[in-house]
Image 1 (cartoon, rainbow, N blue to C red):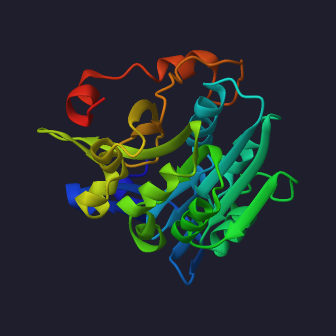
Image 2 (tube, rainbow, N blue to C red):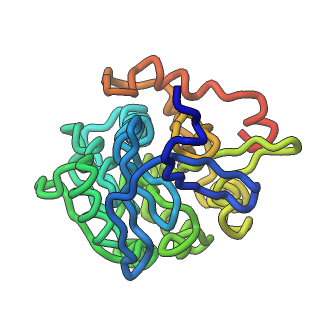
Length: 295
């Protein structure tokens, strides 16, 4: 048997400086560019398939992207009875959130705001996990999400579901990790609507940490801002595992005016990951979530 030390390795590392943590993947670089906003790279891994990274942070892989995208979309969409739904996707350049939202006929409109058109183009070419941008329900906007949200607020444009599909608070995403952005999206959600946020969670010896706060300013953690300012007074959470995200423990956060309980699906849907039983079970939170994260 060949010794590991004798094998040819192409180790790529994702580093989380704030917690002195790294994980590594042995994979081959397929594509790299520096767009006007960020470094975009696509790798090939023997087991996980193609992996998209932005500024050296994993965004999606062929192996597990459906775990994140299905749980982000179907829980808030199927957790409440709606005749029709208007959905806003903030970010989401790989297209997986769009794909899952368009699966439901009651979704009448999907606005997707992505600042970096090259992420969309590279993802379509190398990953092919995206929804149909030509679907008549889709309005794709290339631009800054913070500016879009300010303008939507001033026009009174309202949504049933807003999904914050953001990379970490570095590069182009830094403009949305602010209290003013939270104030704007709180004014763009309908009274019975919900905002979906998410983040990786690390469990330390003393407390739990969001990846958002480890990558950037601790004051720019959206969950903490929403809990503290009560811009949408009800904050709930559910959990999943996304294997290639740092720490694997992954949290989804629901911000709403009315505190509706989204843990009970109103329709049956089965995906590669999502199903009715998993939907309900995702809301069973560990004790440390309640103690450390305020849920």
